[in-house]
Length: 209
Image 1 (cartoon, helix red, strand yellow):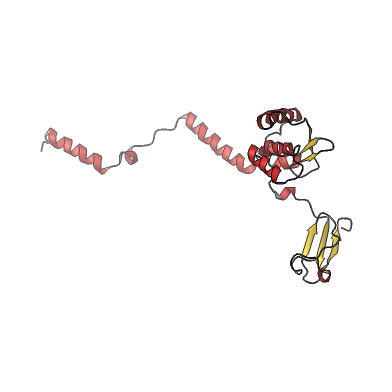
Image 2 (cartoon, rainbow, N blue to C red; image 1 turned 30 degrees about the vertical axis):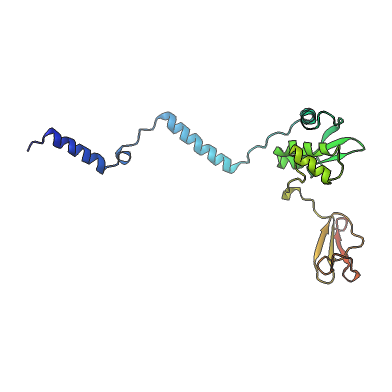
């Protein structure tokens, strides 16, 4: 039985509707370039899981001086006095400013963990040239120039306590970096006042360990 042209067109349209072209079309043959790219991507993914990504290098001291001058003109109209800048390997905090020496120290350990915080730390310490304490004036300046008031925390930056005090009443321990003279247990004492009945006793110190 011969089909007319109209019937053949109708069958062709029916076949197109019944079958999904995306499913029926065979995938294109992979070229050599495609195979190499896929293999390289798999190797990179495996390497990322096995090895730490190298951290970016911190700005050099001359680069910190250039940042200081740039921020001085951007935020302080160039009126800040010039300060000395250096990295510190010992300190675990983000930075510090010593007014007697006019010295800004940048913590290398901290910025090894948070390399993107270098600019923020520098701006923070620059405000200390105007306001030594973290008072309301300091916080207003920090908000104006977009600097943080507090640094970030990380377990690797915590110092082990030098002293451990204990309450003889409840047994709570208080690790501290400095010696306590007249301190009582905050849990047993009331209204935050010193109570000799719950005076903390030194349990261990760094010299005894």
